[in-house]
Length: 148
Image (cartoon, rainbow, N blue to C red; front, side, top):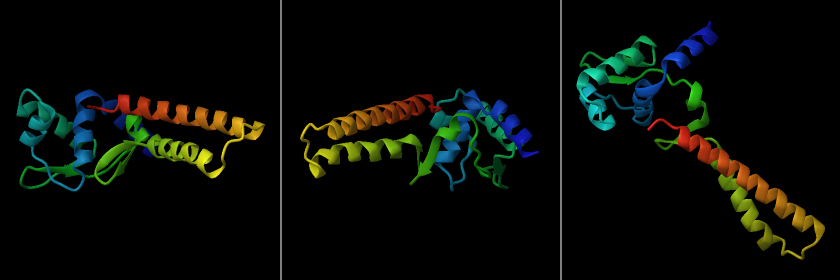
């Protein structure tokens, strides 16, 4: 049952609706009004924002309180959202942490083990360089795919 629901959410969570959900994820514990969504995302009218908020409400992702404000009811990781993790109110690519870790490791390696250009040092630099390049390219790819 949950796989069907995830498939439905993934098919509906696209375009402007995804941008509205992304905005709600950034303001996780706050309630937010229709006009503030409209202003924050540069929508043409409040009715457009209301349409997308109601679409998210019908999917069970947001709830509406008696004052007409909306708040996040459930956080799902479908589609492009699977590549991001929330840290201190920011949504960052998951690969960012590995990218930073491997970059620091590659930078510290010649300090901790002074290079003597032996085979194992050269291989360590090659593998380290490839690892850093791959993780940073994945981080950049995920960052480009984020809803703006």
